[in-house]
Length: 166
Image (cartoon, rainbow, N blue to C red; front, side, top):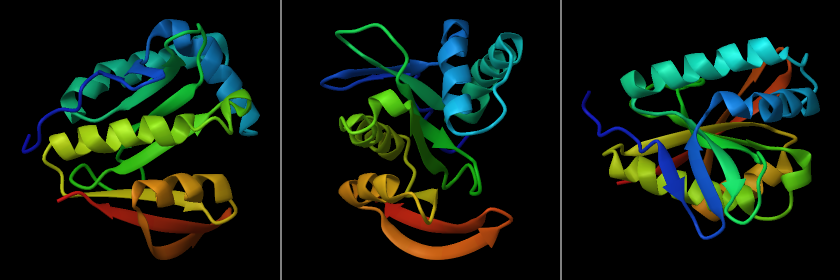
């Protein structure tokens, strides 16, 4: 692998970011349900988490769950994924439970993940966001991403933003 692996845990002023654990399955189920997708069973969610944990070391990039230091409870995730891009220039991805919106958690977590991505030796990150998702664009703007181009799929417009790390 030409890049250093991303750490399995990061810490910010308020947040702990760590690799998924099976105990995150109920929070993951809630997150999927909130986005309007069919909520996976507890067994399905647990199996997805197992798969993510097993594949993380080989890819060197992954999603990390978010929790506050001073409270128990799953808030969402943030990390790097291949998504619509590739392993050399992965996508920054984040999603939070609605109850966690509006607190700056996405920006705080994404700032730590971008720093970790830079430390892997990568030179560029992407992010793809639906055109209607104004809060996600605010996060990306704070991180220094610039809008690059748009594509469409069966659900509508996807805006591609890029961040040069070098």
